[in-house]
Length: 77
Image 1 (cartoon, rainbow, N blue to C red):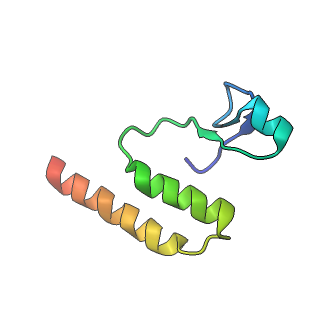
Image 2: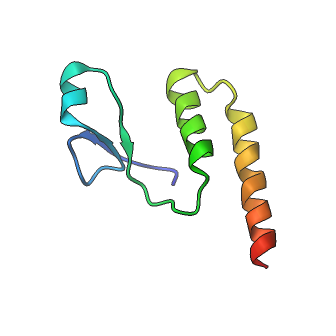
């Protein structure tokens, strides 16, 4: 979770940049790390905050995610 790789059209990379995006320099990327147990809205917000907003609002989103994990843990026990 703390380290990842990236690559254009690479299926082995954690972050995959489609070849058309690599050529045009704009578009989207795919986060291919396994995380079925994570809130996708939180992840999307954090990725956007880090990549586009210079981490503005990251601390609040990180706390939200920690609260989410805590609540999930309480439900499972």
